[in-house]
Length: 356
Image (cartoon, rainbow, N blue to C red; front, side, top):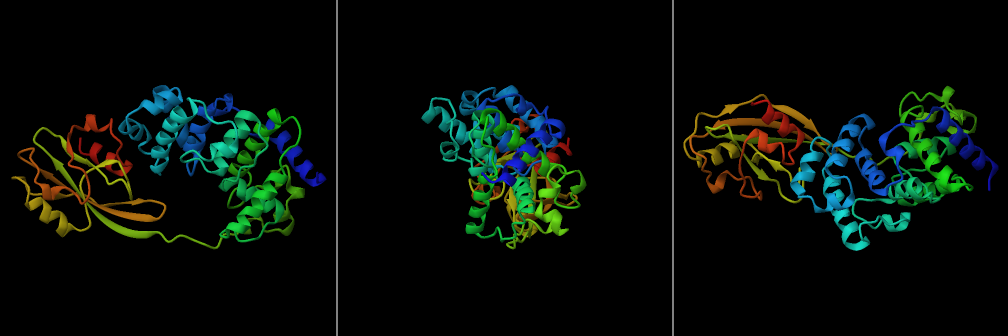
């Protein structure tokens, strides 16, 4: 074993014990269900945001059996606001698969865990390390940043082969002894260091427990790591939202298509242009003159949605077929209170509650 590797692991273990996070709710358990739930929620989401959702999920779904038996709408409703809704769909599918194929018990190895829906290699590694002390690496965004700076790993991570090499380095750095104790703490240490001192911008190198081992620090340019040249292009898109409200204050909602933005969520009808919306509205039964509400922008990873809501109060709760957005389901009328039990996109939920 490389002595520098051993030194790195030892320092990380001591630093985590003294300075790392100790009291997050999912740190107080080795229950794979709870660790899995936290890992999925934490993907691309801040800890402070996850805490409330995590508690609410466990209150409603205390174990994997309860989650597997839930109606998809209830799962999506509890997830609403966390974003990246494919995570919630995969969460539900994964729970059902664990119950149907594994008797309600999560597999014990990272290799088996990675075969489940929504669990990639890094998440599988985290669950196996935290719950079973398995000697397997993780490589989420924070850990990738820590390790590339430590190693001075300047290869372009847009390349699958380079990513594979980094995985090999990550495995070589793992502890070798007392794995039931060291693997959970070491894994948490990497997460904690990446979430605190080893920040993307202006890292606090002077406080880092491995600063003298870090190539990025020695070069005086830790921020140049990691290297990834393939950037995504966020495309702007305009959506026109038809907010239909009947005399009783109910809102017309329909489920979005199974693929695409907000897939499977309930939503007001969406149109690609104002003209298209108005054509659909003319086919509707009598209604008051539509009122255009203040437009707003909602940013997704690969889309910048410019949303233009139009409110129309209808005299009768009857909808013509043409009002339904393309490929959506038939829809139904809901009070705002009833809509709280549905999976709604966060901006649509805010929009509807703003009308109350």
